[in-house]
Image (cartoon, rainbow, N blue to C red; front, side):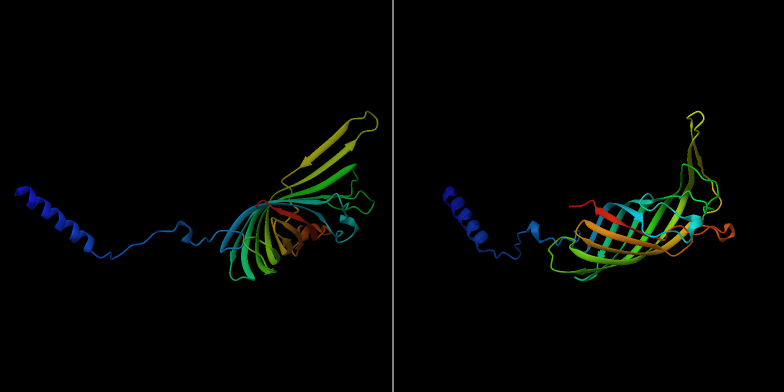
Length: 234
């Protein structure tokens, strides 16, 4: 009798359990999370490098440079915030190295009138750039085609003056490098533009401010730099 009652009790529990309604049942799909970081998503960041050349001559012959030997190297980190399918904003932080090979002519006056076998001025800068990005063309989650318009500001933390000369009498080569110079401005600024397709970018920077302090009366070095940048991303 006892075993029969136990069996009936167990059957009743099973019926009650099967009759309960399921109030909440959800299968979490791992793909349902909306991604916000990516080349064509809300946020994107990537490093880049660039190399360019002075594209115009100096203000006058007293500061002329050898074009093709006056260059610019950049290593930086770029961020982008997508506002819409066609518009984004962002900023760059970079190390910017610019060097100018000074022409050795009778007109030379910057930073002095002495003529050398080789001579250059080198500027080491930390740079901050702000830009507006205008996207065009169809694309998936890639950067695609774009045009950037913006401005930049540089802090020159080191400037050096280098000369190299050979003594024909004894074939000795003399090199000098002078730092802690007083004639350059520590801060400068300008405007920028970039045209890009994915990781490949053609850039142009135009310096609006002067590199030299006005009290030294040096003619300004080239203001326009043109070059290529490569995004270090997929």
